[in-house]
Image (spheres, protein in one colour):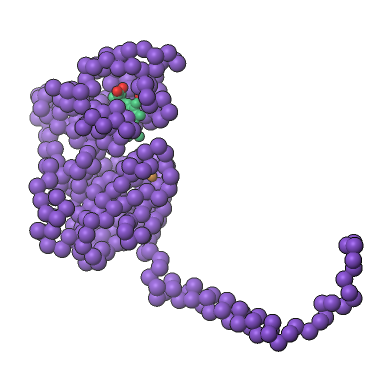
Length: 306
Ligand SMILES: [Cu+2]
């Protein structure tokens, strides 16, 4: 019971005319907006035309890697560049911390983008047009996409995904004519490493090993963190790495090691064993690379220290 009991029958009091009018107006507004929710879906082109399939990270990685390897026309700062054919299926892989590949698309042509993540949740956000799609691991999100204006669009990640989140900036370039490539600096792109065809029984030459290593660096995602220009924001740089002594933390103690084949192998297979000083807070995840890949990568890292 409250201290003062309300006057008997207060709720029977008649609603005033003004109040009634506002209630009716509010009701009409609510109904109008309700109807528009449905109309926008049909007329407003608000909802993306998309399908979603279940996949696995391993399967999607394999598909996208094979797709990129076969369609690569160049490399832009360690990220493969692909120029898909109109109406084709295009694979886009999100991973800590990059979008791969860079896409060169033709204006007014349709493409079927398959987008998925290799690790955690990312957000595929095309700027400045502000189109946003969530990218989950284990789901293949199929987005039918038709660019209608030329230009260079940034793909940023709008789900916080770790220490390198802010560096996760991809690129979609939409061109109309062949000359447009010049506007974006793609007219003489760095050529994709030549695919090396193994001759029977003959061991690969050093040069071929280095090429395959560079290809693995680009395709397997190492380039997302490891740079070859000396910058080491997210991970140790690979240039000048081979043969140098480095401070690492092993079982809590700081020791000095020489970077050689064995150390590189161990760093890739058991990244947590010896953690490079300065990167203790974000050690490297384990990547699915084969022993063969590792040999190629070692050859590539060696070639960057000559
Ligand atoms: Cu992200």
